[in-house]
Image 1 (cartoon, rainbow over the protein chains, first blue to last red):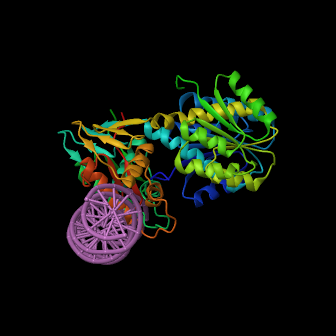
Image 2 (cartoon, chains in turn cyan, purple, brown, yellow):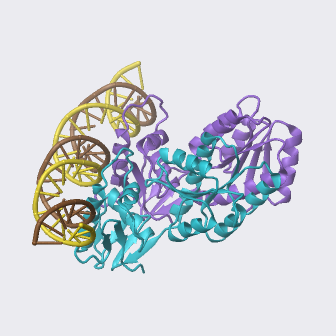
Image 3 (cartoon, rainbow over the protein chains, first blue to last red):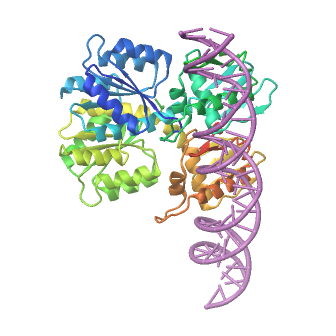
Length: 234
Length: 234
DNA sequence: AAAAGTTGTTACAAGATGTTAACAGAATAT
DNA sequence: ATATTCTGTTAACATCTTGTAACAACTTTT
């Protein structure tokens, strides 16, 4: 598995399937966001960069095929289509639009999980090959090398958790993230309860980046809500 | 897409299906090698590095699942299983062994083609890595000759285990691998107790490549999870 | 302004990794 | 065949990382 929990977005208008699917995937440590329709999903897809999309093909409004076409045009995100019908045409059209997989309902959960795992393994290589370097507040953050260089060229060493946290921040600039979400980004253990861990990690990041908690330039506090990455990304 | 035609190996004991499939794929410009069984296929797989494997699950002798297991243990080649039966168990086992897809006979040719295309797109990034000679951090690693040359042209001698470990790293850049996985890459024993062996091997690799564990440029540590290859591949 | 709740900071214990040394078995040379 | 060298593994201990508790400082609400 890759380090941080993979983020899976489920777009499904049937509430029962939606909830069951999300619950099942969550027990395997994935971060799951559920959407009832294309509109809600697009907000998520525009703000974040999920790793995998599971889409019902028969949605009211914009359907699964349309979503597949749009997403594939702009990203290499993994796409699994769900369908109630065993319809050859739908399946072939979906696959030809670039969906990676097509699963018919009622589907076997274990099978879907295996497909999710395999597809995440495939897309992980692609995601990592696209080396991303981010600049902010004079720092240079190489996400692939897990490495930060300061304004003066000095190397800043990050621990694993600090790296994951910083990555979560720069992937979601300007978005307030609550502690649960940040925690799921930095921890690999399942049975963790304390969200105060996040506070401590943020403090440690602030220390390494010289950010004053009273006047934060990079890691802002949103009282009662969580933290935000506020530095301009260059 | 890569410039050269993708190479697809079809392993299928039914001559009719085999020929039809090969002919169909060839009309789309793929290079296709057909094999009636596992033995013939292994000769091809050992000599060349095909891009995709289409395997019938019910072969006499070594079956498709066994082939899947073996191939997945040593490469990231794309694998599509074919089956005459609509058997949930077979399908799930196949997928859990790491097969990328599972298609039931009689299959729709157009559907299979779409799946082949999609899978080749996914594995393209990985095939890029499977090159014989890899450059990183000033070193040149010839995977076939098991030989490394440093920036100054000096030869760096690797032991078998070190070579296997380095190979596992280079094939999975930027992906955190846990000790079990790394261990299975360097050892072929079954009854392994301690995974600390990996730590020692990583230390020795770091020594030979001049990588400081406190500021790792090549072999990164992911606390609580494992190790990552973080050097940019050129 | 006091109360309630939230966040910042510090210190510490548990857990994980880095490193060295030692050793048995495998490979190689004599 | 025997001696020698090399390799992979294990154990032990030093060092680093991480999660948590406790309390101080701060913010919001009443």
